[in-house]
Amino acid sequence: MRIAMIGAGYVGQVSGACFASFGHLVVCVDTDADKVARLQAGETTIFEPGLAELMAENGKAGRLEFTTDLEAAVRQADVVFIAVGTPARRSDGHADLEYVYEAARRVAGAISGYTVIVTKSTVPVGTGDEVMRIVAEAAPNKEFSVVSNPEFLREGAAIDDFKRPDRVVIGVEDERAKAVMAEVYRALSLNQSPVLFTSRRNSELIKYAGNAFLAMKITFINEIADLSEKLGTDVQEVARGIGMDRRIGPKFLNAGPGYGGSCFPKDTLALTRLAKDANSPVRLIETTIEINDARKGFMAERVIGACGGDVTGKTIGILGLTFKPNTDDMREAPSLAIIDALQGRGAKIQAFDPEGMTAAAEVLNGVDFADDPYGAAAGAAALVIITEWDSFRSLDFARLAEIMERRVLVDLRNI
Ligand code: UGA
Image 1 (cartoon, rainbow, N blue to C red):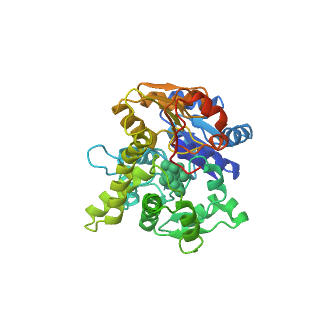
Image 2 (image 1 turned 90 degrees about the vertical axis):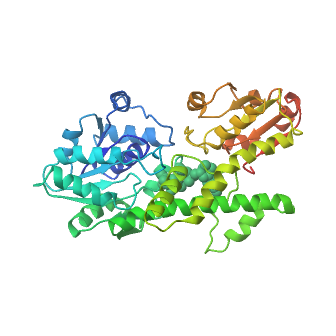
């Protein structure tokens, strides 16, 4: 199959490289010429384990290309994936669909022959219907179908998630498109990954409901963690105990400083907006968002408490800045709110992150970046683990004790 991937961001690069490794001929399109030039030169523009190798391998085999020429890529394609961003609209938190609709209009102008247009971007229920209307209006004589195929990739484990998914969800309204999508994902039938064919609107809601449920699950265990601290119980044991019930499951029960990233905060908010518009508010999710937002501030208070109630003029060492390990992504990272609150109380911040410091330097002010964990700990009144990078699991405590001003370690991830 010939595939055009519109948008060479996180989802586009990972999905493009994985589809190419399934044997398809993939062209990834982006409007950012600099980014395309870097990708053409064999660089990845994101940190994702295994991605650079996968891109190089498929590039060499002639199955993966990058271009700014949308029209040429779409003209040749059997399937066009729209994988552009859907950020939260600043004014109201609704998903901003401007880029999706703009892509749909340009795709409409370029398709030739029967083409399946697939939204991979996370979009509210009904967006596929609107894409269909836009394409039909712009290209009344062309043959096409519109499909929803949300992604369920976790940053840091995206390639494995793509190749060994719990499930693939495909929202289709006609048999012809269903057959094409079955062919697109045929490689996955080898490892018997379940593929759920459903309606387009169902598929769109599955994506939001899935992320909202996971955000709620994390928030639940975070509240149980707070309660555990008061009761003298161990939240990790409690999580293990409840997770053994298969109806609950053991995953996503790690208590921490609150969820962040490019998806959960944006998607939970968009779901509440979508639900309000449909006159059916999702109060559990509204509350989840409130609790999670407040939690980041509480985490700073914990650190201040561990320092005796005052951090004015004190140095606080921070380990881990990214919203989770194995990524360089700083979007909605809990570290941002925690550092901001500590600085607001007069603390001086020294931080270390294995991959995130370049991205962090763009969004943090007044932070000294260290070369390693010990640089962050030197002279510190407390050392705070915010992100659970593996390398922080084997710190040399004797060395820390020597170089820190006080022996205080606040571990917000229970590692
Ligand atoms: C999430 C979903 O897991 C993916 O399935 C989905 O495709 C993706 O969003 C998306 O919509 O694109 P991601 O944001 O990459 O993936 O990261 P997660 O691993 O889900 O972590 C999100 C946040 O929850 C992180 O801040 C993480 O630290 C936190 N978390 C996660 C916890 O605090 N505890 C846990 O047990 C799990």
